[in-house]
Image (cartoon, rainbow, N blue to C red; front, side, top):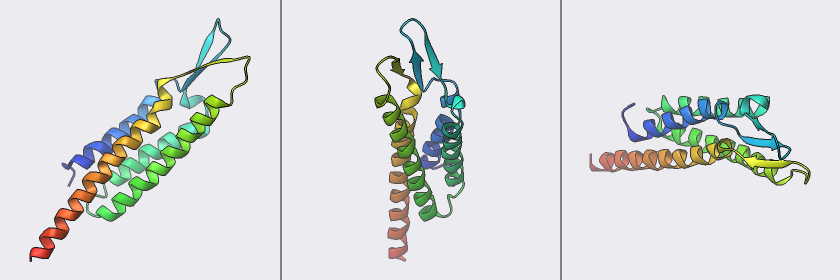
Length: 138
């Protein structure tokens, strides 16, 4: 059913990963006088990963009849977000000393997505335990 709380969490993940990285800068780089914002659309593979995260969240959203597959897809989505977050951390730590870099709000998007995916998995597990307890009573 679409009206469950995990559906709201998955929809939020799809919105966050599908739209925010293209409107908020991932990081800013340049000389001290002029910082240039770098968006996810400037790096093609990063934008593809963000689109994949959004599509996985939407696919998991509509798999409400099969809670186990929904749970696994959320785990896969978390791994994808961790890879993206790892790249952002590596990128921010491996800059040369001549350039100045500021972290943008876009670097936090994978972390926020992971939090909502954990909440969704917690709600899915709760639903699964409820269904198993009702089946035990029959």
